Length: 228
Image (tube, rainbow, N blue to C red; front, top):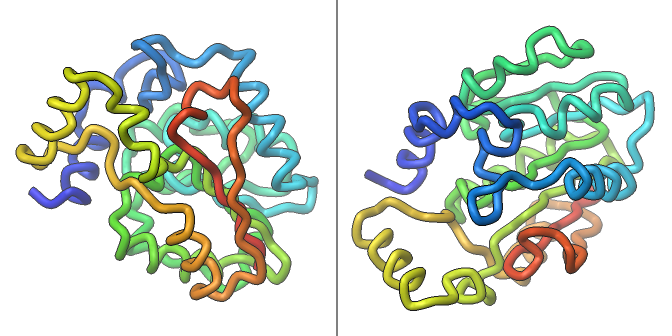
């Protein structure tokens, strides 16, 4: 099974999506425990600042999952489209603040040119191959309005891979996952690759953003902000 097919099957069929908490449903946990509301509130505050959200914004939330971003931001913008491969994850957002949900594969989905002022993709770029990421960046550039922003968060850092797989047991699990074609995280990215990809895709600015040290994944993940 190819890696992208593995992730599609995972998010459509894995029992994780049946868990009760917004963060548990998408695996945003540490040592099996979901991120606290306080820490997530800090993340949302940072995202809102980076995106300079306002009541006129049309927001696209890619790989929206259970709505941990779409739901709180829906009160701050004009419209939200939340797209995810998992219909079950999206179902928890039905009827909330006018959010429009789309159970679809973003790789084969298209939107109108200049449709969104802000786009967010958080904790999910790892589920795309490098080829799919190149194509996705180009599509995001097309969908954004001039001067619009895209924020891509929680990206696994290739240079810090073994800061995550940081024990003998974790290393064994990592290499076993390669042999079994059952990735534990997904694609790891070089910062320079994404900076150059941003330029290739036509963005006038591509910024690499370090996460605050108290973020649960800061020791091996980073963020990227794209400006059209």
